[in-house]
Image (cartoon, rainbow, N blue to C red; front, side):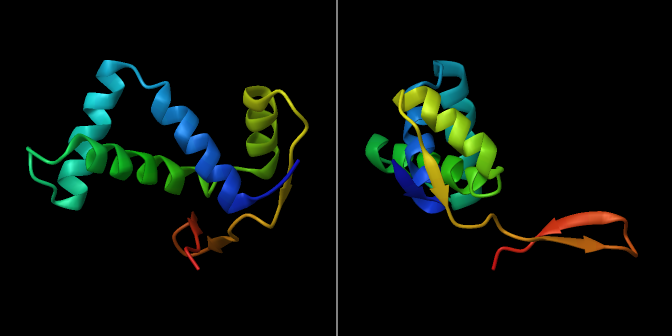
Length: 102
């Protein structure tokens, strides 16, 4: 099965969301509420959407081999990821690496 990187990140985010423990879900909910300025009484569906999107965003920066291996294991089929990961820009003055969000 061939997937775009964006599709792979989305699939893994659903898998991760569905497998969060109650404690992990509460931590993600707290983080998402503070980052997105969501009310404490936000609808559960909307909260889950924002949690999944934050997980999906994080997976955009994972290596192709990690995405391939993880999805192949979860789906129990061979996966090919199409597309390049975001470039890493080296900042020599600060000696830090920075991902370009494009």
